[in-house]
Amino acid sequence: MARICELTGKGAIKGNHIWRSGKAKKKGGIGTHVTAITKRKFMPNLQRVKAVVNGEVRYVRVSAKALKQGLVTKAPKRTWKKGDETKKA
Image (cartoon, rainbow, N blue to C red; front, side, top):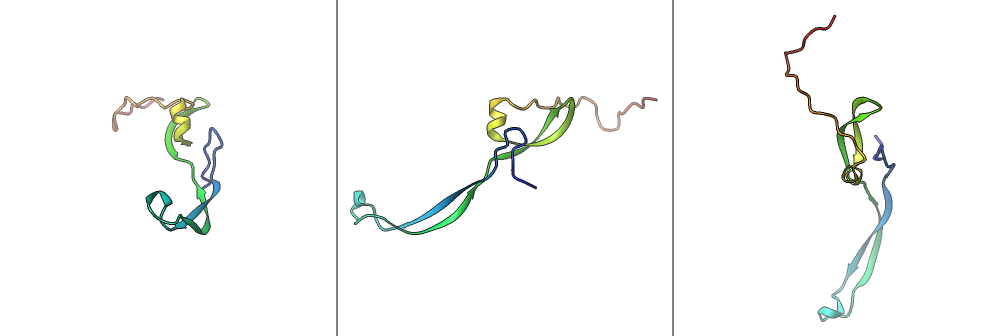
C-alpha cells in the first residue's frame, strides 16, 4: 500500500542522513566534520480515519496536517447497539 495521503497527495520525500564526528569549536574542540552521507526517506504522518466520502462512510488514510486543517469530515458516532438491529423488509 502506497504511503500517500488520499486528500492532499502528500507522499514520501527523499533526503540525507549526515554523519558527523568531532567536537564543536564552541565546546572546545577543533570542529565537526562530515564522515558519511546516506540516503533516507521522510514519511508523511498518515492516520487511518473513518470519514464521510461522497455521502458514504469509509476508512481513509490522511495526513495529520489534513486532519488539523479540517479537510476531513469525520463519520458520526453510531447510535445503535450490537444485537439491536431492526429488520427492514
